[in-house]
Length: 66
Image (cartoon, rainbow, N blue to C red; front, side, top):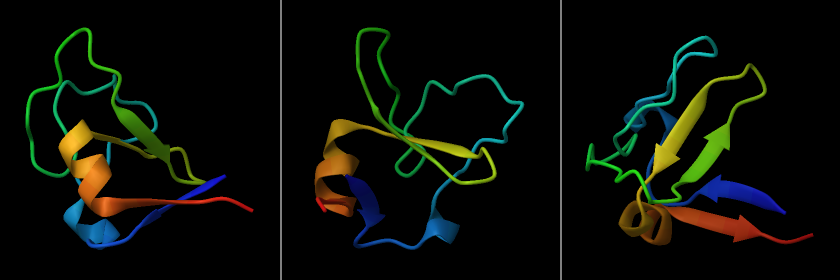
């Protein structure tokens, strides 16, 4: 399975650095992520991470199944 940004470019995403603690907001719309939420998390090959709320994940992320 591979995730692909379908309607936004990676420059629009607030990526967290490899040594930063996990954020508590969506990396795109900045909506707060509640403690019991399970956000979609993407990692770059260099270790950068982005977390997406359910709304942004549904709207902007495409799952490619191989």
